[in-house]
Image 1: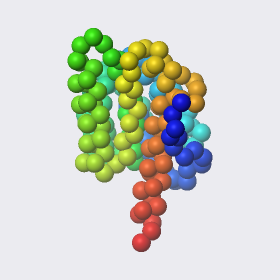
Image 2: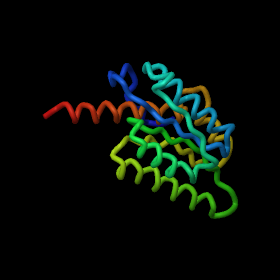
Image 3: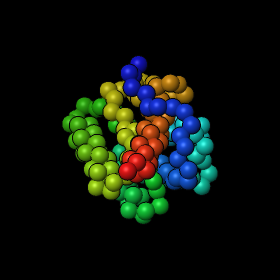
Image 4: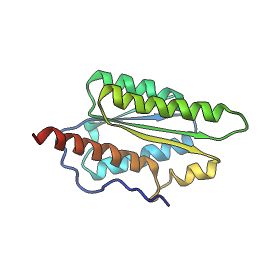
Length: 160
């Protein structure tokens, strides 16, 4: 069980737009992550036109899609969701490292919250456990993180 849970509750963010970008690779897992993210956003009164869903082929494409979404200027935050499961080759290490680096870089370069919802697991069961309809859903955590960061940014902007 994870020790960190983003603050839950009613985020008073006003009119915001969120891009949810999920990888299609390992869709049995990423569909659960997306569902968790959307549930968390809806619980915080964000749905319909406030949320746009996008799909990319795999986890490696998440940073580029996040960067493109950020550069449109249409979104206040981005939620990047994917799943890489360890195999017998070093491919896992390269994809995980570069995807992680890229997602973080987009947030820093574009000055926008980019929530990290990339699962990097040893097996399919670990991934499914983190993408199910339960308190450990990492898509939900990523959505709550994006909302918390938006709230933080708004507070920083308002206080002079």
